[in-house]
Image (cartoon, rainbow over all chains, first blue to last red):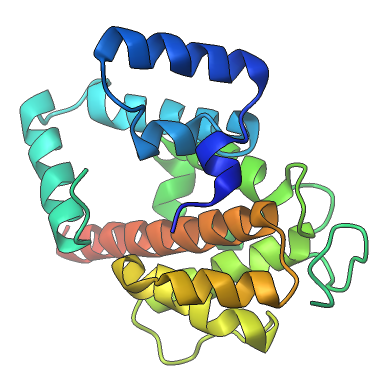
Length: 81
Length: 141
């Protein structure tokens, strides 16, 4: 079940951005993006900033290695993302 | 459902107006270079504007974090009606069913409240596991 507010409860500005993204990618905007863009100040923005720092910031691990860790973790969580 | 709405304020706040307490963050998370990000996220999720009271959000995060650490002593400071959903999200989110969400709606929760409860439970699961990982590294070091 998808919550209707997360599916289509975004602000008009965000909805416009989602239309552009859908047109350019020719795909439905992914659920992860819909979630991060819903009420971004209380969840999406801060977690995206943290994720960016962890996954793309300075590290002893390469970006590829970090992505592998993330993929393995998602696998354990039975998540395809 | 009583005690959930930001308007009815049925539960006490888990922390005072000064913000996130350090007990919610392990030593390494405080001193590590990502500590600022952790604090910012916790504040936004647990203390930002919402459809549920901040005290409830903190209690959900704490319960989920305890689950993630594998403890049998799980805090029960949240309404019983939320136990199943919060515990399922924290331990194995992929087992959440439509019926679980429908039950929350039938209990009177709005979709925004369910969204917040879900985020708090997921965040608790994440911080609990992160704390476990830091503790494991500390033990190995």
